[in-house]
Length: 79
Image 1 (tube, helix red, strand yellow):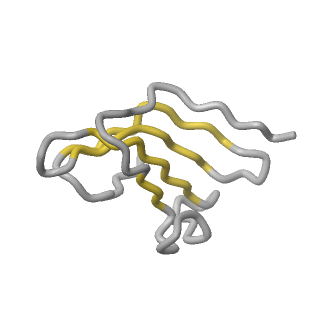
Image 2: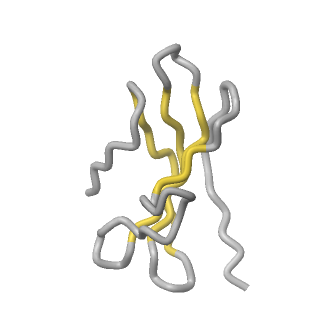
């Protein structure tokens, strides 16, 4: 079980997958102060720590800043 604060007032992971490198990728959404949902990806290393190579701020968290969107599943192309 992982709890990661991605910011916002409500953050939900709706799907998780293990990638070809053994990293855990989660997809979901977080709500901002106005209640608008933003699609969010979080990636963890195999030991459960955040993979800081993901995201423009090297946090392991990437928030797609579009209005009212979320993810319910994730597909990884490990080819």
